[in-house]
Amino acid sequence: MFSGSLKKVLYMPELPEVEVMRRRIESHVLNTRLQTIEAVDGRLVSKLPTNWPKLLEGNAFSSSQRVGKYLFLNFDKTWLHLHFGMTGSVSFVSKDETPPPYTRLKLAFDNGLMMCFTDPRTFGKMDIVNRVEAFVANKRLGVDLLEASDEDAIRMFANRKISLKAILLRQKDVAGIGNWLADEALYRLKLNPTIRGIDLTPEVAIALLNETKSIAEEAIQADTHYGEFPNHFFVNHRVEDGDCPCTKDTIKKITLAGRSTYYCPTCQPQTK
Ligand SMILES: [Zn+2]
Image (cartoon, rainbow, N blue to C red; front, side, top):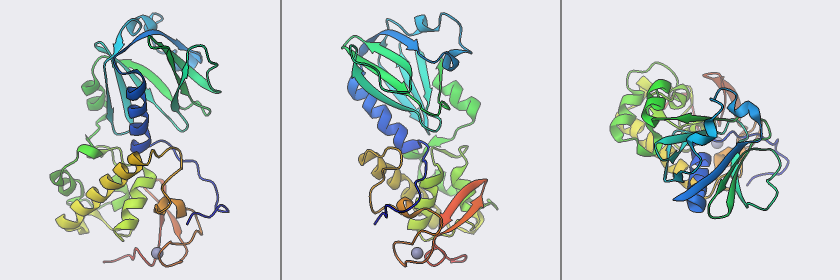
């Protein structure tokens, strides 16, 4: 169980959190006309042409798309791209209510709702794009995790001499796997994060990617938001000197691919 005495860790929004926000936005304003959009924080739009609101205003929000942790909202041929940075989030109030604290962007819709993009740490971004495919190609993003196939799994790990953790975090093969998701999947499959991709059999490669996918789906179902994970998730124990839920052994922290990586030395031995 999660112990309240553990250090509080800040979790950046990853695929599950962004998918939860995508569904929340669709459930509130899909097929609703955007009346006005206003950047409360001018830094958000400093690189856009001055008439940028006119590219969106008056159009209905007709669909959304998420690739990895990138979110796109379609307003009749023009897409609003939202990037959540470290603390970005979306909430809805009625148009006559005061927007929540740290609101950076306000979108007023025909149905009386106002969508507020909040971001206390201000690392979030917005942009306007004409084609999502061009953005994805430019970023060299691979297939979204929830769409990835067994063939993608085999290709992802085959012949790679870098660590499993580093491979999972690469966005070029499969997009959307972030730090906690990678650690959670490796823990559940009892794989040490330093094992190299080349040392996995195709069966284990498929199992690892499928596990990652099902954890993401489970987190989406649980409406995961900023560190509020289901109790049985390893991520709740994923702090330095935390206890492993299975063995009570001490969780180890190492750095792989430049990222903090947590694992249990007993459950996830160096060699299989
Ligand atoms: Zn353990």
